[in-house]
Image (cartoon, rainbow, N blue to C red; front, side):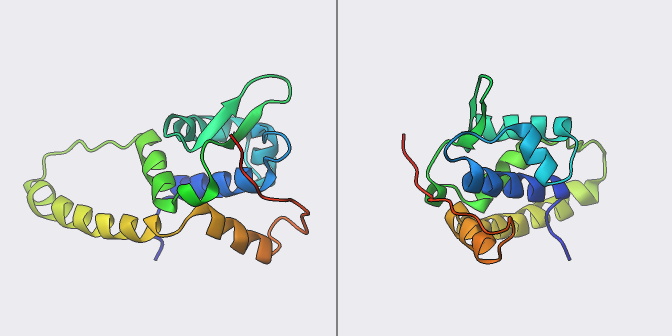
Length: 147
């Protein structure tokens, strides 16, 4: 059973992709979308949410795009998922007393445990797994981070 919506999975994939491909220049949204077989506009609101959450940094200009705003090891999967949820258009309208009083608190408690587990997984580990599995083919990229 998948516990995360596609939007959150896509956010994690986008951050790992940027972490792997952003050196020596930022990753263009168009290139990112092409690698994940999405229309370029599909990612824009998600990428902007990741910028607002200080996970990605937007670089303007003809060679602009996105790069990490922090070191790989300082960004957790939980951080990314929280940013993706904040960017979502969740509509919690309704008047069910059962949902409000019983189900929502229990689901939120379970969700907190799930996010705590995701907080133990950092982008550096995800990048290492992606590179070990040759997800993007054989890459000769030195992974460093400078500010």
